[in-house]
Length: 365
Image (tube, rainbow, N blue to C red; front, top):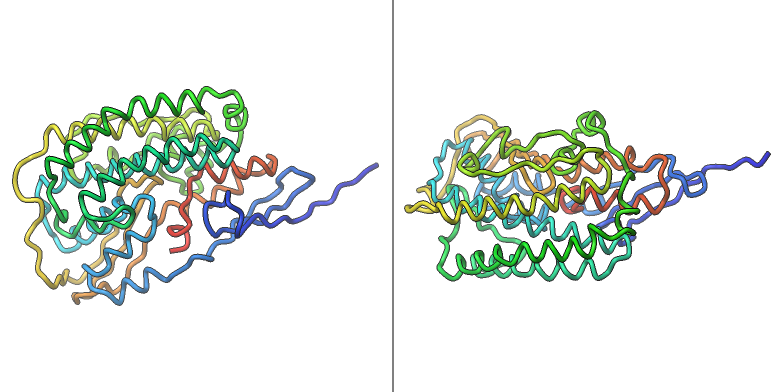
């Protein structure tokens, strides 16, 4: 009788398919995965402690450097928490502008996901298309605030700038071209039999498993759980817009891809409605130059492209936060990797990692 022995294989921390500096310790029986343990911390910068040594306004640039693929949503989440803590009322126009930018950034983030997933399974051309199209969103952001990755556009009390006629024109042109972009992705990837073979029926994550692990965002909805903070705990002006929440059925890698593809379409619907109904008025509230929220604490969450982005802020009444803790969806969602990989092959680990869509700057914080 031939007996096999398990052995350990280190995937990373320099493997390109780990999406950053991440090590995954795989316990294998042949090519079958027995266990997959993500080893984090290679990018830890102590951002929470750094923020506790800065004023509330000075903390904002640090939020850009967490999930740097969707920095607008991190700006949004932090400012929203501080505003609730300090009882700052944001003008309606600023709320609409925030929604427009958050949804544009959600589309850009999902395009990174599509391109990364494609190249991870060997479809290099599938990376070039969405990365090309994402540039159009980055051009909009560059025109808006002078930055392409780290924006600090959403500020405590509102936003930095109003929309110019040129920016509105750029957004409208992008929205008009978006359906043809998605058609290209579908022609190249979604209907490709090799792409389907690699994704369909692999790395299953049931609704019960996802809830037990604290998974949120597109990963949770791909498992069939209808939970999106834009609907469940509506904030800013999301209740003014008509949009749907895409859901998966089986919670496999293909569902996680399809849900994000469909979310791009829904985000475009939100942006179009917000532009059409953009209110007049101020785009920022009058906020003290030195902000000192009253003593107390707040935990506030928003729906980012990867899930629930939360800020727990404790104020002692001074100009600096006494304590900040950030709930990073990439960190929480990555805990599902072991469950998603057990019983599958080494090659499937790459796909599972890609459909989690982690940003390691956010994982390590």
